[in-house]
Length: 193
Image 1 (tube, rainbow, N blue to C red):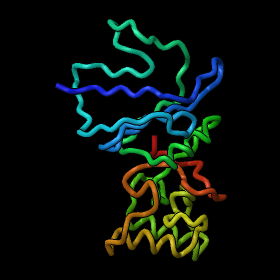
Image 2: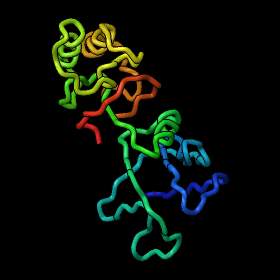
Image 3: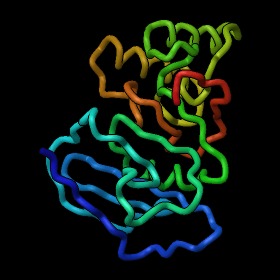
Image 4: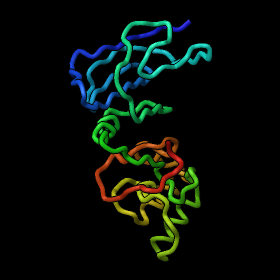
């Protein structure tokens, strides 16, 4: 039988008629609540998040038999990640609340949703021969320095074949937003939710 923890913000007033960005993050030790990119509450909590198929999941409401705290408003752009986001990632997501940022997979260049040798090959072909169609410039910028060059292919190959540290946040296992301010974009990434 599970235990529920409730976190209630002590700051961050809600203004009727204005959109806010709200996020909750659990990292295995702390449950944190954010409003517009700023942490407004947290609680120490340990243990795994368990699933129970007989219990419905509700966003913006309580189960049908509950009558407390009914939601009276609109919800847009709901996302559930398979990992805890950093405070910096929450801040970036909140900054894009007027328009959703494009999610991408670092190191993924050619649009198949995986990071492999072909990503380095297509990037090298584009850089050295001017050939190839890059599906996502942000994804191709494997070292996240804001420039597409040989070092990006080397970073990808290093992770794949030499055991180098993972590519910059969010890494090759999860889609995410670009944590740095650069001119690169990712208009055509289709493998991230």
